[in-house]
Structures are given as structure tokens and as C-alpha cells.
Image: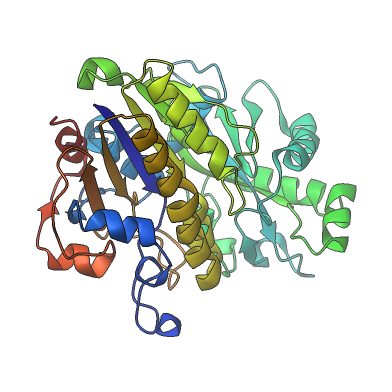
Amino acid sequence: MKYLIVLGDGMADEPIEALGGKTPLEYADTPCLDGLSKKSEIGMVHTIPDGMKPGSDTANLSVLGYDPKIYYSGRSPLEALSIGVPMEDTDIALRCNIVTLSEETAPFEEQIIIDHSSSEISTEDCAVLLKAVAEELTDEEFQFYVGTSYRHCLIWKEGKVLDLTQPHDVLGQVIGQYLPAEEKFRNMMKRSYEILVNHPLNAERKKQGLNPANCCWFWGAGTKPALTSFEDKTGKKGMMVSAVDLLKGIAAGAGMGVAHVEGANGGLHTNYEGKVQAAIKALTEDGYDFAYIHVEAPDEMGHQGSVERKVEAIHYLDTRVIVPVVEELQKRGEDFRLLVLPDHPTPIRVRTHTSDNVPYMLYDSTDEKAEKWNYNEKECSTCGRVVSQGHALIEHLFEK
């Protein structure tokens, strides 16, 4: 038996008037998901433990079977694992987004945060900008490391965990009240803006109609993580397929394999086909029992507030991930169990994460059911099945 999770990050949402009162998942053209759901178990799962912030860090730990209340030590340390950052026990890792501020003729504190991803900037462009910042701000206390796209890492030697605001939580707002209380971080953010606002690369981006990547934004602080081995915990040898450093970091910390897929960028136009090929190869040629295919695009489109693009991202997940995964495993004669779900909702209305339950679908190629349900929030809620502890769901996947 082979096992897969296909995770549509932030895919769950709320009914939207522009979609006739349907959610993007309910509205999107997903014939494969809806076909499989009629042969599957469906329900709702609570992935964010009560009292914890809704994020892809805590939620994906849950989905992988790690109780965040036990294993979570901060988001950025998990990403640091992915990019090979050496961390001491006394180090603090922080996420360093390169964001877009409004460039108003006003003090730094009165700028407005426009875009947490700077038009989904490429890693290559962002590395140039981060280098300009690092050349001035790196010292014995602070070191910068390049990650992926707009997502980078700052290591604070002998630091402390700070309560910092996630940039995607305050889009469209004046930044002053959300800046770090710690003066040295406020000053670093301000100085990064002064370095980047007139950078030639940003001038060129604006000519191309792209948002300038003009300020470092620090958040997600945490200590060096310690995850138990996924294989020891589950008895399954697992492979992670994701473009996102957070997921790669969780996998690295758990001793899972990490696939490197060329052209996988975490955006709407990622290399979906390459991700599928990597998962199939892991399962059928490389001796892996389990593959986790993470698709970031629905979450990014939710943060952007784009209904149309979120619907498109969900359609792509169905047609360019689910369809070829199922067809290829069937063609190779493999028995498999497939779990599909989001990690958390990212509703268009709020453009950030919420802690609401999310819909799941569990399909078993050897035990097809005869149900009436389509796969969406409404019908998964209606069926009445709820998994109250997200980290227990993977045990259900591995029951056979």
C-alpha cells in the first residue's frame, strides 16, 4: 500500500457573494476531486490547536502527525533547517520577508504595507536585494541567509523570542503600530527600506509593472527545533514535495526525504507536473511508502485577495496534481490511500489565515465507497464527521 497527502495550502474559504454564495473550493471545476469524494470518506478536521495562531507551520505539523503543542518552536527555525542554516541552541531564527511598502512621502512609520510577497518575486531577484541589505546590516549579532522567493532568514545570536506581527495579517494597513517593540529591529527595518527603496532592481521592477521589494519585515521568531523521526513515529518512509522552505524544513527535521523540483516556486504557475513526477518516482522507484505533495498557490491567492486566481489554483490542484497522481498509480497497479485537505483556511474576506475546521477527503483504491458527496466545505460539514485533533488524522490514513 502506498500513501499520499495532497495539501492545498489555504484552500478552504467562506461563501463569497461573487461566486453565488459558494466557496472557491465549491465553485471551482474539480471533476476528479468530486468523483473521488463519492468513493471516499469525507469530513472536517481541526488542524490548529486551541490557543495557537493559525499558520502553515502549526497546521502542517498537525497534518504530518506532530502535535504543535509539543513540537512547535517557531516558524523560521523550521525554514532555517531547509536552507541549511547552522543554528546553535542559543540562536533565534526569524523570517525575513522582503515586502512592498507604499513609498509615501511620509515618515517610515506611516507607510502602508501593500504586498507581503512583492509580486511573488523570484529568488534570484530577491537574493540581489537581500545582499544589499546584508552587506550593511550583518554583524556578529545578526546574519542573513537567502531562502526562496520573498522568504528569507535572519539569525540572531544569543537572542530571545519576540512577539512579531505576520505581514500578511496587516495588508493594506499603516505599519507603525505593527513594527517590532524592540528598537534594534525597528531600526533594521527602517534602514532596509532606505537601502532598497531606490535600488536599481526595484526601479526596473516598477517599469515592468511589478511591486518593488523595498523593506525587510521580521517575524516568526523561534528556537532550534527538535522533531522526532517521521519513520520512527509512523513506520513509513516519507518524501516531501514542496516549493516552500517551511515544509522542506519540517521534512528535514523529521528525517524525511526532500524532493527538489526545478521550476517549483510556490506560486500559481509552479511546476505542478514536476511535483507529481517526483512523488510518483519516490513511491514506485525509490522505496518510499509515503509522499506529501504541498501546493502553496491557493494560500498565496487568498493573501492576494484574488477570488478568480484562487479558484484557478484549486482547479490546477485537481487537474494537474490529483488527476495525474491517481492515473499514474492506477496504471502502475499500485494500491494506495490518498488524503486531500487544506492545512487551514485563507479566506478572501480577510486575506489571512483562520483557525476554522477544514474539509478532508480520504480515498482508498482498495475500498471504494458509494457516497453522494462532493468535496467542499459545505458537504464535508454536512456529513457530520469531525476529527477534533488534527495530528491524529494521519494515523487514520495509515490504518491499512
